[in-house]
Image (cartoon, rainbow, N blue to C red):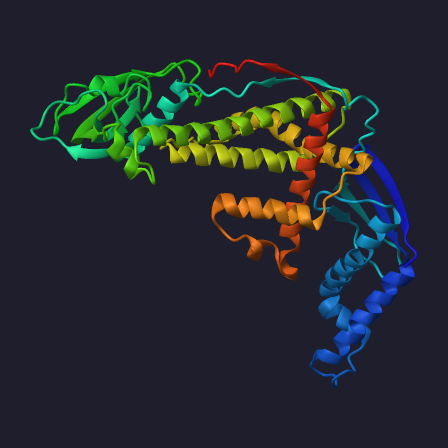
Length: 436
């Protein structure tokens, strides 16, 4: 098809493409549509296949315009991209004129493309710092504490007593602000640990000393930096009813506990195993931080734009992950537009760097000739299967798994490229930074 195509650069990663389909192609497609239509529809007063074009246009003109327009765009979209060597990274947005017999048909494509990364500035020999992997006895003790907490049980009080710090309580409560009930502020059967950071600041501390069946009105003043700005710094009043009190029974830290955790004979065996686990986790954390520092420096040396829709998509994914993690901890973030806007502002810079990282590593891999072999992909999947305890072949084998295979290939290529950059960097080892 003899198309007229004009490409406009909106930005380094966004293009606007004007496409003109010649009138004879429009006429041909409309003729083809009506020819097929005439043989299939029945019009009262006309024999099958004999209805005049003008009658068909009267009844089916709008349908003809929509279907032919869609087909013209579908037939010419990929041809346009191929002719102009455009490789979209987002779904094209189409804006079109009306379709008219005997006239050219024009439509516009807005699309995002991969950034061009010249890599003119250094990405070899970068000076970066790497934390020393150091696991202390305190790290092992903290891990053991988490294990003990996880295997703790809640036991009914016998005999009954007042609420103490560390107890778990079941309460009903209703909150209000200046006498007006809070939206979603009435909750039934909420399980709370009586700890300062388990709920709103100062909430649980005011319940210490109460007994099952007691009711109390308490006031909680929210901090000025509270996430919901309309409540920040305000004094909320809660009517609380104590429905149940349970104490947490933590298993003693001894050889019996170690045997319950797996194939360990003594607590010393368990500690040694946990130390290795922590070391492996620390090695991965330190390596990730090193790679992040390398990528950050290369991006600073070779600035480029990231496709906005990919940044937006990654931002939404990071927010979804954050909300999921908090839900697992029993914390639900407000879904108001204001909170969502604040989350987007917080996560967008991280998302933008992650999107840039993907394009940057592909560009470096192409320039340095870094490739991935089938054997390396198999090795990666074998390691993944060993770590997860699942056979992953079903996820990547078969013609319908092409997308999954491509993702695995991209992951292995990214890892190889990061290993190359790590080898080319000048790394200074520093002491582990204290956890905030």
